Image (cartoon, rainbow over all chains, first blue to last red; front, side, top):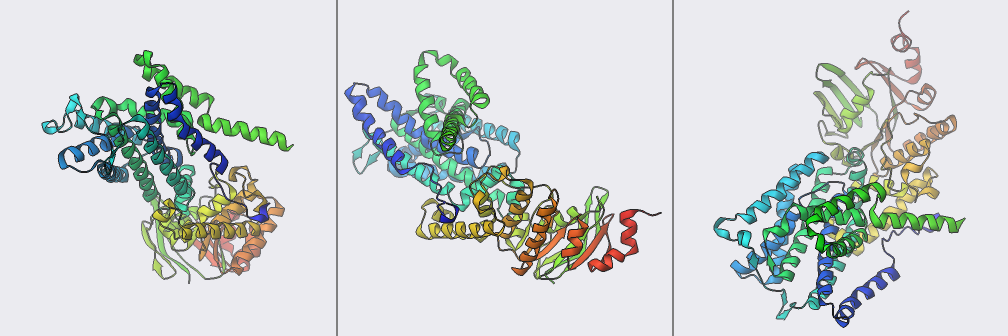
Length: 327
Length: 251
């Protein structure tokens, strides 16, 4: 086997991906048939959360840097796209991309100094950045962001084709999610992806192996901010109304919970995490007061009982099973 | 001269760990660096490879002044190294460790990575084959898919050397490569060092195992209390009264 050079590492096999995609395509007609239109909206949220959490995974799961402020980039994408459209008349598809690019540039500017910080100082500085952005949108000059009242916007429109139903948005969101996952997978399976993992494993040895540690940390940060900001812009034009409440610290915690719960450093972890935590959130809607309490408990449970999240644990279980069969 | 160290001094506060050391290292040879514990050997290697910037002096590698450059820049210039304490990427596979070692030799851009261009795929494929070739050189090819941390101590040391060689360096700095190896593994290392030289790579090696060192080195220099005590061929060093005193103490 070793001599066959059959060394391709694929995160998801072809048939599995095809089945998952078919299931995903069938969700809206199914939910409409049972008259659960609201369920399609929830699935739209899942899709955009997968994009955001996959981004966070590049920085946290792969390069090993923590960020507790990614709601800030989610906010910059959301507010940026709405404001570009509202004040400058930029077509929404482009406003989303420009806002995400702006968020990425801000991310890079922040990441340069932040990449030199040690873990706990980094987490504190990212919390501080999240708070700064939150305060800015809450108390903007001449209320350009709508301040605490929030701001309304329109749905995404592709040359007149408006994504104004949940089902339409769902298929668009699905396409975006698949593209983001493919791009992330490509990045991870490249020399840059290996460099990120090497930095997480042993930054000192990575430097010795010729890897520019600062540069790669900044790349990871930039990719994650683009993903989060684009997801934020998707959120804005799906809900068509945003207010600062959506971008508080607990949103950053939500992203991290999804990532830890689903499994870090994997392609499917963020998908599983976004899906299960969103569903759990809906199921526990009656207990909204206890949301943070539930996230906290979940995180503790995952860290103690399921290191590697659901995906990591499933993989370990499968491996054990395979080994037994091989015997 | 491939590497010249000119009057290098490294201080930690008031402690002078390396004091005005000058050494020239000839191309295509194995140069040994010995000395009692705490003599400043690893500190000197760290100052060459960019872990610390020297407080004084100059390091010239292949005609290029690399004094005070960062570790990754020095690695890029063609100077690879291994560590006294094993410094592998434990949870990456054996093959991935070698591929990380090739980082500086892979040219694909970030954009090419995102879109998995044909050129990027071809480069990755070639890199894997070359990594495999290197693994065969140390007979680790069957373990390519194992986590590096699961290898035996001696295998980990050899993997680290291979990771260093993966960047096609002009020179490798080996910090106690035989530490923790059994006699069979040491004989293996001896052969491996000669093979590295045959491949045109210059070696600077810190090693406490005198049998290995005296057998394989072309030239040896000795550090004591941060200063150069002596240098010469292994035979000269073994006869040198100052070296004998440094190692065995003064009666």
